Image (cartoon, rainbow, N blue to C red; front, side, top):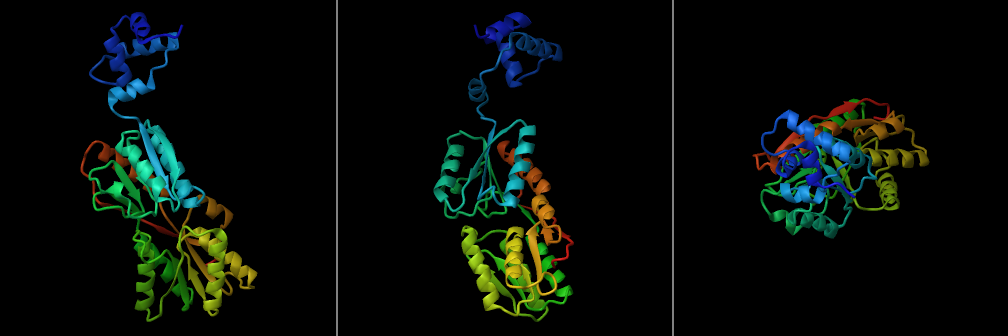
Length: 325
């Protein structure tokens, strides 16, 4: 027969209420009592009812992570870091890939509103979702503008854009193209574009920004980059808004007989471990993924406790030296 809570109480020589308090970490109990209860649980192989504990505590100990796609190295490494740290904090994690799917994102938000998860960490690009209108939700955004109430964790995108552009200028390039998302998409990453354009103008040069929808397919993106080289055959350098695009640009440049860095300079953005291992020569702006994850969890825990939080948390970036740019 499967052991019950009263069996644990009897073996530990305590009341059922005391066992319940030990399981839910509520109220003062001596360490001797706690140890006796856990020893009894071990001897009986007693497994607490997780659902009952969640109902008692009025929390699920589940956090939802909602990002465009973990196939992207930046979001993949960020998700991995968040899951690892959340597990250490006692949470389980559910992961949602919501690339270009506003309905899916709204479904996850409704899980939060119906108390099926305790909180959300989001980094998606979908806009106009009504469920975000509620105030004081236990939500933290990473590199995304949601509303004025939800805190944003972001790297210093503007400084990163300045670092990348100045690096290319210092290498002698003057015809520099930047790739970024649509101007209508209000995300912190847009500051990379603003920084590039400001820096080019400061040097009396004409900025050229090629807009790329984040949600287009690999083949569609290749077509955009092929068109870029046709439209700007005299391009000397490209500042890509992420490392995946930078790698694809270098591949297409090679197909067209352009050598990097002899004929074309390329700088990326993100600096994930996998890209640095696969393309060690890529010059890139490194985002502090571990620090971003740690900050997001700290801020989310404050939201869960209804403690005040700032609207923006800006984290430093760095330039990773390579030979490509």
